[in-house]
Amino acid sequence: MFGMRAHDQAPATHFRSERVCRVNGDLYFSTRENTLEGPFHSQDDAEREIQAYIERMQAQRTNS
Image (cartoon, rainbow, N blue to C red; front, side, top):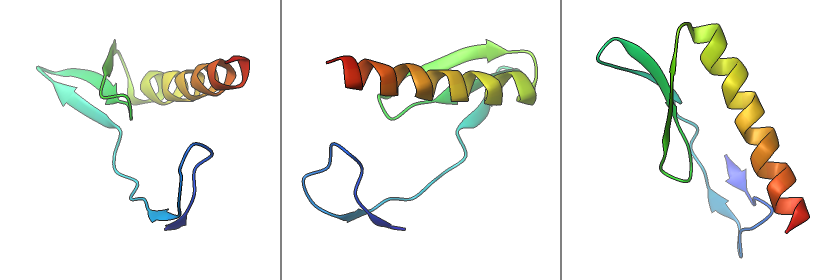
């Protein structure tokens, strides 16, 4: 994918990877900010929290 995110200075290639992983049997998701969020009980819980995390980050950016 070739394009720009809102905070990018110039177009670049961005690759989407799987955000959800298992660590010692628990589900977590990784962020662009290099954090590991979780643990979650199910894939659905993790995906729901990914969306909530994205919304919080976007709201934080618009309030800054």
